[in-house]
Image (tube, rainbow, N blue to C red; front, side, top):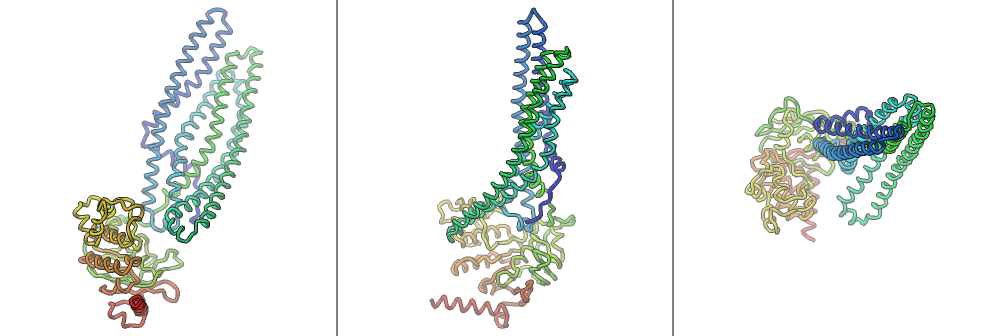
Length: 595
């Protein structure tokens, strides 16, 4: 797991606020409604205080004061409610728009992140960040930014009103409120790392769930349910323990500022009574001051909650920002050009390792003329598939080069490169949609005739026609309703429909029976005509008809290199890796035939 860097709170808040720039009018409308609510909230206690003073100082027209004051109070209350209602609607709209933008940004970033990022980041962690963390960030906009801002403005507005009523009273209020503010400042900073740790442990919980859902058949096949339950229980208990630590700290912290603030109300009341006895303050003004403090007391309870929400939001923002600001090391060059129509590939002195100090491939030199069928042959783990990942620029070489018609891959448009070099992976991944949509995945505007042509070339048309819904059949998640051979043939059709000048077949027959292997080989022979085909395999039957076979093997237990090259007829007559595998597989086939 990569070391996580903690970004500053100021930076994260600035980044979160930047999402408002696309919705300035909506944000301004919400702010105006918040100011209206604030104005009504400050006016109502003052109006009530004036009514009390009028009633107390008058012996006549009391009923008129009561009626007039009640109408004004009632009218302002209605306007305040309408403003709050409108604010709530607009606030929800703004919040959802921003969160939708954030999710799209995160999805785009993850989609374009290099393989090295996905190698080190579990899918469970990405799911958590895309769902749970984004939901927590939503609370920043809906609660912290607006409700918290309203509370701060109310506090400032109340301070101004108290000064207006009686400066000495405002001093008494300020002295009683200060301890609460100091307590908030002291304890707030310690919450964020606690919530960050909670989120990190939650990643591990999500990862176990994701693995068990994806690998449920393996878990059941090996009767490993109990072991996975123990693993999940351990992870969930670890998460709960970290959550309890954070909540326990927050609970202790939240009680202190609230308790300190509650002292301010009786302090101000006693100070007000004293000033009233000296003739400096009216009863109505005392009532107004107490109502203001009561409103602040209610906001204090909200602020205590918002501090927790703020810290969890910032912790989640840190995790999202970490991904969005990460550099993408594989990207288009400013000089990126087109992929040649008749590519000739030259791999020279290529060295690469997933960890630079541990190379997987070393000093590889391969020449692939256009239109040839070449094979990368070798045992498992010698770097055959790694070489193809380098050819598609999923990774960049540590040294050496890969050139197409003399042009370095770095100077070829990345999007076009991956359209023109099409890979059929060993694991035939299919999406939970129709067969037609899976075949046309790379060419979504393909006509029905084009889709059927591709399926026919891949020997898939006949079995598709036997299905109930034919090409409209929903194949289920990861193609679960199809056999391994059927999935592989749909993968071949998906590659063929793109008409790529370079087709890569990554051990496409490794997991099928001999009859299905022959059918897939026949399909490959049809599809590979008129284009360069690179076959990765450890089966002799898959590579024996290739124009050139490159045999890869580890050298002295270290990085793999090319130990043999030539045609099938030449290699079986030369002692070496290819001949050994050939005899092993011939003998194995003979034993199976006799059995």
